[in-house]
Length: 113
Image (cartoon, rainbow, N blue to C red; front, top):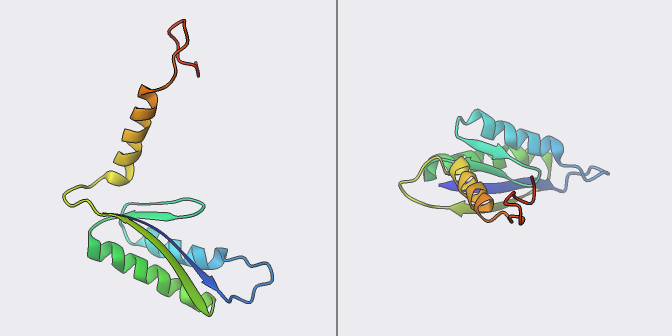
């Protein structure tokens, strides 16, 4: 399964509202998990079996808790039994689909060439 999640504290008391230290603690948990993962500016994705992925999400929430009086968790899951390698596979299929529909100019070259 793939999980995309975002976890952040509120009630931090920081004047600038920044949560980067707390997010760093959560991402550190994910990176040390050994599971395939990817972090972007808004979410972290993890791939694995249900119990191992959810354990990492819980540990990430626990790592964020000391940074504020509350923790917000946003989670989206793609549950597809029997599949693995989808953290990259889904993107590879998307790129192939985009390439197959790239507009072609009259000279036969793609518009971006």
